[in-house]
Length: 117
Image (tube, rainbow, N blue to C red):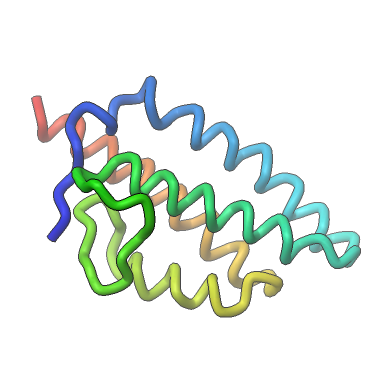
């Protein structure tokens, strides 16, 4: 298991990433409502942002997610869910799943911060 990095799970580090997701999430939702074909491209940005969050908060040297590793910061079934999202980024269900991953990861990071102290 790849453990979390106590220095990078701090609110000052992760809050900007969650703020970026909030902005992007609104754009993805609008793209799905308008059916303008932009949802897939925006979702790829969201997937990249989520992977950046996992890499940033994990105690590792790699700059890419390793699908065969278990990350302490990931929620339950996080890697499987991420694989599902990556396979079908244009689907609305995948947008909802990515949004849930962001929410669950935010809660998990908060628990890890409390546990660390």
